[in-house]
Image 1: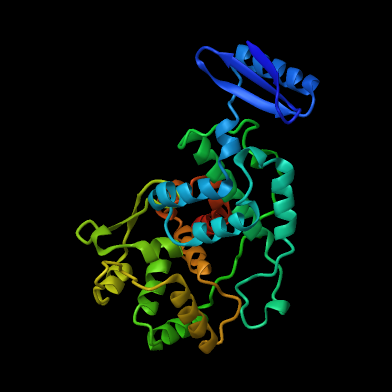
Image 2: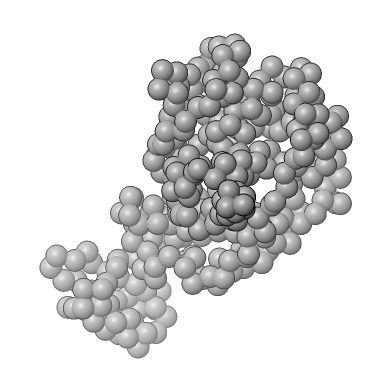
Length: 342
């Protein structure tokens, strides 16, 4: 089944052929290495565990990243976060073939990336803090997803499996617990309404009332709103499937006052435009250490404090795939129930 032949260069090539299986071939400097490799491939074919390497060897990560961005991501992701992560991965891993992506290489990416300065600090890059472990973890998680899609969706087997599964990931950031006091919330809404950005105040209200992620909110179209049923259809997005988000009276009121944009988007501005407007409003309101994502935490905390929402119901609204992510809110439910006990 195996053919070993000498090449003009002086090296040796092993070719393994079996009916029903693509031909496998590899070159080696020594004949003994070629014989040993051919024997391993024959044993793998006999066991039914052989995965051809040719496609993985001929496909670079840059090529598969382009396919991922054009064929997969638009149907499964909302917002821009995935694109920024993918761009970072391409800088260091783009030239490597899929077969060359080993746990050691992914580990080196992790270690090198943790030393990079955060590129978002434009004014004085030399004084910028290093990239956070949570950011690097998110990039490595995306790498794992891209490789899974390459194998399962694009039909490119990974001979050694997904290397990310054997790589230690940085720990994610500790869950934030920042919430606004009543006075801070009043000041924030006052400054948001005073902003020159028409969509800022309604966007803040919608975030607090629906617990939507920023990317979901910015991607929401008017056609996704069912006023009669009081539901917004969100997704598909991070959870890979659409979900219905109930709209409170406050959310409907916020929608009522918005002008209609030509592109159909409810909040027709970019992530950075929204970020800057929100940052300036917080500064004018003298509110420190508060991010846009904290609005989602505020929304879920309020639902938990009501005491009449189950964790499953909260997950249906928030879009969390696992209930583990919502465990941090169960203590708020317990406090509310304890108050009822007297």
